[in-house]
Image (cartoon, rainbow, N blue to C red; front, top):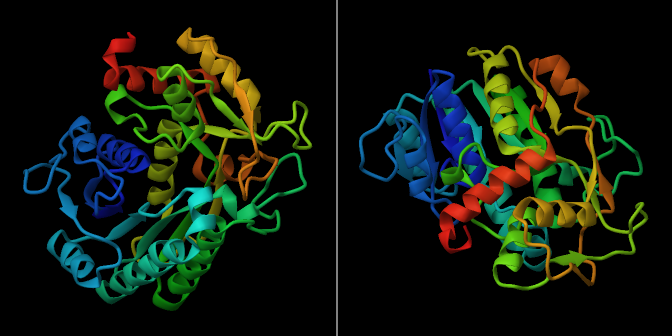
Length: 338
């Protein structure tokens, strides 16, 4: 049994590769390195860490848009299941570049599913997103909450779910779609998020440069006027992937799960800014309010009851642990701040 992890050199992907390795699963990572980093895999026990380096988790340079490369990797490594993480994921960028997002996220998935179906692979886990819900007018979002995405990124994820389910039904593939809420933290410093598009590293980056962290909008219909989100520790998320993969039938006869992966607790952007200042000890300057970003809903908080029931899984880390572990990773790359 070998799992192909697309985007496995990314922030989330490397954590999933780590969790799969720790559970005793065989895996191979495919990444085009547009955002992924080969060195992340060096922190994963048994991983090759870069193209051409032997290891228990081989690392293949390739894109999900390249059908021939996918067919070669699936055949060469005897892939029997796929965890598909490779995608573009920035909401604001998706508003500016919708054609790029549909090409990368939807067409890339189509090419991958074609290769999977042709090779007779029978298990498929899809990385979806809470962005499929748009701006739900509920305290807790369940999997039955209507999906009304409000930006191209969310649209591509919902379209991806439709594609995965349709391909699963047509080709006998057991599938699972995991709707991530806001991912944060790190299992170890070397695996921390190196980008600055997510809120916690965005705040770290501003504090490091001596600038005020930005809060995008303080006039939302929430208790303090700032957006409220459900934050999930990336290690908990990775462990959910292992659980979901384990439930899929190798003959394609069982699956078709759609699950929220979150905690059920909301944290506002202003609350997060205060927590970051407290954990890092860098309290000045105060957060600065900037205009709203296009496509940002006011409140999105998960109900994770179905994941608990179906996977026997629950989140174990709180928001403070997410911020603290992310800060350790930031300090690894910025030792002058220690």
